[in-house]
Length: 68
Image (cartoon, rainbow, N blue to C red; front, side, top):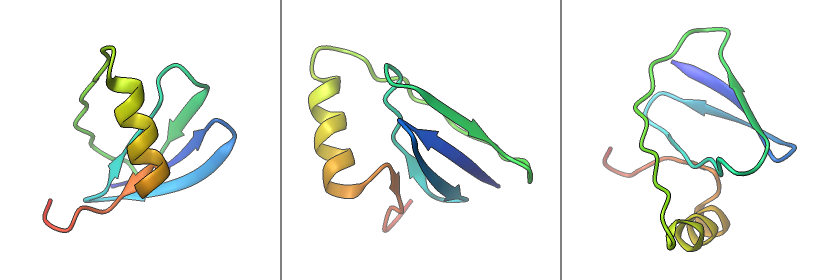
């Protein structure tokens, strides 16, 4: 499936096979007009902020893995 996201005021789109990084402490929304299934991992510990900032600044919030 596919979904549209609003992450801290920025809009983006994610399709099947993509990975989305969401900062759960910042305003965010997600919706789908097409339907979708998601696998969730909630990662929150003292180093989570460092990992999130590095990955989102390096790769963006929507990532297409080479071999998912």
